[in-house]
Amino acid sequence: MIKTVNLCKSFGSLQVLKGINLTVAEGEKLVIIGPSGSGKSTLIRCMNGLEEPTSGEVYIDGQLLPHKNKTQLVRRTSAMVFQQFNLYPHMTVLQNLTLAPIKLQHVPKKDAEERAMRYLERVGLADKANAHPPQLSGGQKQRVAIARALASQQKIILFDEPTSALDPEMVQEVLDVMIGLSKENITMVVVTHEMGFARQVADRVIFVDGGVIVEEGTPEHFFENPTEERTKAFLSKIIR
Image (cartoon, rainbow, N blue to C red; front, side, top):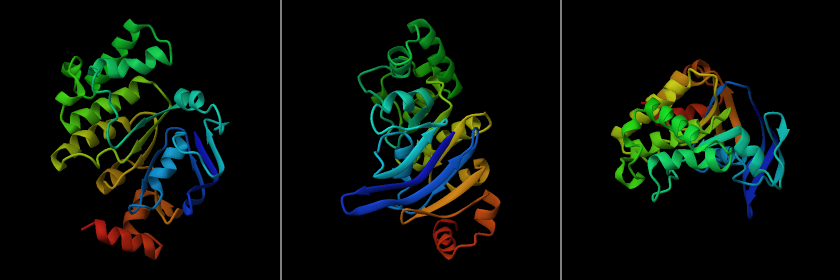
């Protein structure tokens, strides 16, 4: 579903990604971990066309992501859940979920609303359909953001540190929704620091540092028998 070939990204003189070669299979749950500044968020943003690669290629569902006019291909295949929710505060929750299906996919309003309510119910927030985002807690906002991604009915959902902006007591309610999603045939790429989630959900874990993939493997390999010293040092600091 996703393939990067020698993907490089620089911001001025700072090279953030240094030749990333990665393939994500249909239905795979890939978790990306690494220290701050390692390039993991830039990698996932390149997958969604939000960042322009300096060089290299990104393929989505077998199609090369073009440097121009990429929006249509990206929006037709993937949805993204951000750290900061990115909900429209002046719109109701229901309106946030129906905007893209109506405007971009030309779904009739009634059908879009029925779809939106189905996914709001799934994340436990059907009773908040007419609320506005400022009336919600952080955890509720992120669950709405996940419902919005689901309402787009795309094959791929990308998560960029979806719990990093939440208070600790709100993290689990979001992770529970994501754990439920992981049991479906949705391709998920998740940048996260939640190691318990990675252990439970991931088919594969990759560790990114310094703009390169340092190590990858199953959760069992990664957390119980990593081979690279850099990986061992990172894990020793975050797993107590």
